Length: 425
Ligand SMILES: Cc1ncc(COP(=O)(O)O)c(C=O)c1O
Image (cartoon, rainbow, N blue to C red; front, side, top):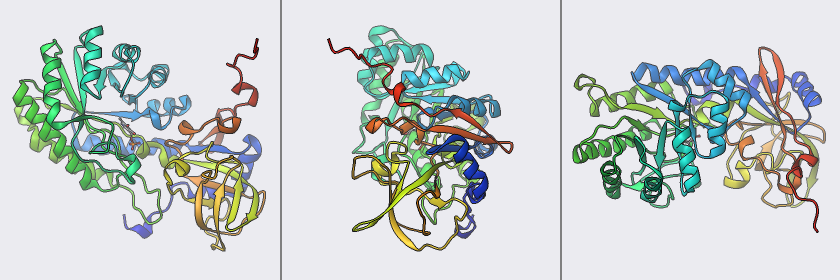
């Protein structure tokens, strides 16, 4: 799709001032607003691209991106085969609660405790270990039928350095030159089936990068198979499929990309030679990022050395810009295309100077009480929200079939202290 044709999928929603004002009145701000139709269509588009290119595949939604139970149920209703990529006992719990089949769950931990490993072995169909030390710990508690290891192929890619998760600076995965020993050790100890996984970074918008990555994984997989005398049951390409957060970026063409990936896969595993390993993918952002916006109200404008637009949402509500300096489009509700008349930093009420949702942003003139929409917050939005400065986390609302529905109510201050021990004596 040429750049100029890319229109944000929720632009029409945030253009409807009356409808959005009504949401703010009914549920309060700050508010995470999800579009159910966009979420379902993202999932179906991804599934159909995979179905055209692979005969045996499994989508494991990366639960770290979003664990709202209602959204997960909506996703599993739309795609009953949906699996989960889990990275904590809490994510295993919610996968179970929303009915994601055990066989469709992959658990990728790192530096996990023995208790966590034992739990993951019971609760996830596929256990993906980050290192040989996890294997040694695991072997003390029992020998699983199947095991997978996370490969660090020596390179990685992400939309900025902090989210590159393989290569020389990454804490994740096993170096290619060391990985055969780990598989050998697992095999000698009685493990029967094997997988291999690689998650090399997030936010990638270049389809050719995924071809390069898959080629590296498959080259390593084929080498291991011939060296160690087994055939992989599955190969996970991880997540990392980007969305156009920044101005001027274009979405990935999933049909084209998975078609290329299918060809790459078949060049290593010719279907006429017998069954090939299953392809697993672990997408987060591409499924849910662009199906939500954060609705916030302007709480004040300050003219200092810079202009500040104060909001009732801050780094506690939405962390990515403060944590990584990420860019998120912000629209003035009701007039997203109004001319830019100011340049401002958007901040919240948190006592940190890093509390920013945007920096030096050209924007239409706004005044106290106006509503703004921070876009593309569906992935790593609510799931990274915190209680910092003892502020309750916001509510979440789902728009579907022309209606709105509360899918997580706003927390109260009292709830933040509900587990605390009050008596000092
Ligand atoms: C192991 C693993 N799989 C999948 C993902 C999902 O990544 P993304 O949201 O970029 O698709 C992540 C994210 O960090 C991850 O660590």
